[in-house]
Image (cartoon, rainbow, N blue to C red; front, side):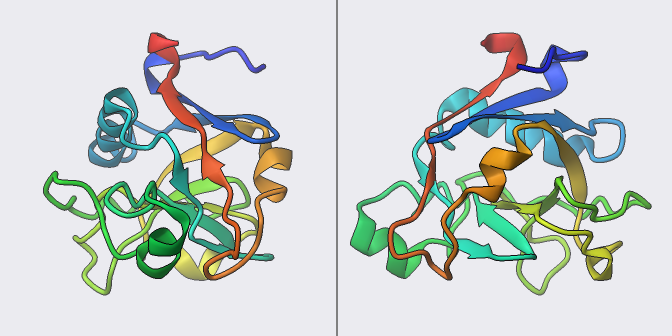
Length: 168
């Protein structure tokens, strides 16, 4: 596993095929990074499904309200919820949506990101300055590539556990 240069800003996401290591860009998007760490530390992301996975585009997860429920309900509702915390203000930057970057999912309102995020499968530069980039996969992108596709997937993959490296 990759060594965490900054354990306080490194996230370990355990998937069925192995660990994905994410470097948070705290100097670029401190609000979004702080939210991810808070939700990881509370266990809110554990067992949350990937509810929207589009080949060549991205894998979306993080619906802590609906994404960890039983299969049938999660498939109908995942992607519609967030956390009990307030929404985040957009933190747009010049960091491009390249393969492996983490982006904040949101509604039409730029300041509506909450808990959901996506991992880019490709360079999706049409998203630049429209969705907050706040991290990047530094190891385990092959595990992200193996996530079951679908909108929603019939049998979705889940984040088994999500931990801040400083706590692991």
